[in-house]
Image (cartoon, rainbow over all chains, first blue to last red):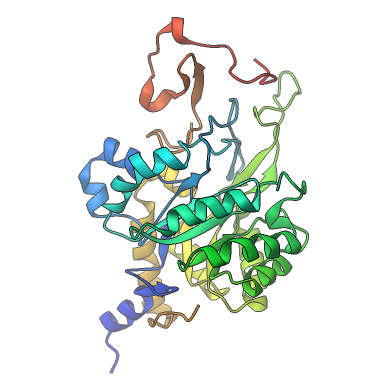
Length: 311
Length: 44
């Protein structure tokens, strides 16, 4: 006998690669800073954490200042950013941020990026030793400086990268796919075949804005990445296509603002859904969206299997 | 500004101490600390 409450629970409790999660909503890397949120909003937001897992901002080996400003441009229903992955670098992340993030009431996923396979390997090895970390996400939206090819835009690059880093850790490896690729499904397939545990998509779509006065590029980085509701339909199509092409779990994201947006991505094949740009408008959006999703899922009879996925 | 609480790094301004987030490190900054550009070709 399935009660209404039971169905809600089935629709919300989930798991990714053996990591048990209270509900399917997590944050997109770089769009929610748990340490900054604690400082500004206090312990209440941390205790009632809006996400079922926390994905931290991209960590690189060396510290990065990020791109010159201006870094943002608003479009109809969207946001272009050219932030440039400012971060403290591996050493200071381990010393200063990891102890604070490990104290969060949800599993921690660390996003890493390197400019060569060896760099990614160093990051993966360093984080592999830390029990506080549940999984690693690989940001592959940057060029490999040795080949000049964007790692996530080329199946051969992804295969080579994973052949190097997969043996370095037993933790789940999530490959964050870029939509700026000729064939995203081919990249996802290559990732799966080379041992990726899951894929996450979409990252931002390359975009640009001109300064209306000077006619020159507005963003300090010339181009940036488009996010927000403007990209939702693109995300849905790419998630649908990747779900048909691979068997590993999918973390879907792109313009999710409401429970029904998350439900669409789950219906298209996602296991988890990430909220990004919407958290800038409302830092508690993740909690609202997961509640809306649970209500919708109970009403519509859509439910995911609550048992851990094999990956 | 996207978030207003220090998460997005969208509102940074160049200073002698590096980029500062205007939302949490400002909004009032010491004018003597400001730099016009930290990175060559930034267009400032």
